[in-house]
Image (cartoon, rainbow, N blue to C red; front, side, top):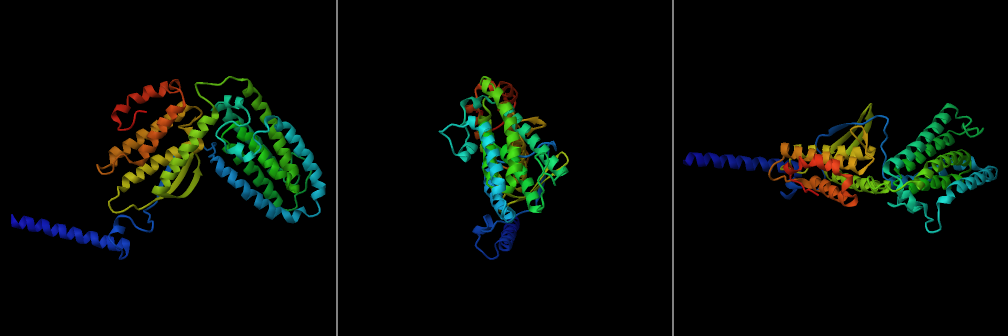
Length: 403
């Protein structure tokens, strides 16, 4: 009996010695507290996550990020075009003012005196320009933005085909490469602002934002304001039917879904930042690929579970960035709920497969459950009857809130 006790004691001593050596290597002579949490973030081997996503779809960011790029774009224009503007301001200013006045005549009917700040309109979660814009469904907003982006792509294609004349808006010789680049950057920036808009009011504001920027840049003004004028006329055609249609109780307003989308994206990004560092993203045919370096959270951390949860969070984040679930547009609260429920079930699956008693359900489960509850509080129950019936069969087996 004493031999057995002695043997156990020796094994315990060996294990303690092993832990001390590992701690010394990781902490470089620091106290044992850094064995559990190092002062400097350390990373483990990178993980690659691939998610199937139609290559024709484009990822769109948040409205605040798109607006932040406005200042960077303006600074770049000021630096690159200042040398080309000398002596030509008077020649171009009259043309720019005429085009701008025409543009204001098209879009000005949507503005009232209460809301004058374009950035406020663009970032708002509600339709500030007209209550009737709340009648626009998520599909309506998607269709409006896609139509304008297709038109921008046409302008870009025409410009690439004949850059020396800035087709289709007249004969303008582009001697300076910086001016050519500025035109391309302008088109891409306008596209980003439109695609990131959360409301119909935001789309209108995005056109006025780039128009205000362009009218003060003489060598950009003619091409840019012509583009915006064409976009504005097209937008006007798409908005007119929305003003006449009734509010859809079954899918709600586009601005509601956009607000939910943005809220969940921010939460998922916050979660991922606390668990891993995003190194690269790339498109490869019908796949969107992300490479993460997981944060080393200590000797006792369940790395396999951490990696699996990173993948679950990343997959849902990517779906929301592209607003696509298994090839289907996320254009209604029902499809949004399906995406959430899919992530909830996958998160539960990886917990059951890799989890230990000490791990618990984790932060991600709480984020998803809270978001599901908030979604259910925003929309009426009839929006989710189909999904609730399907999810009810699985819910009893999951240790998550029913809300």
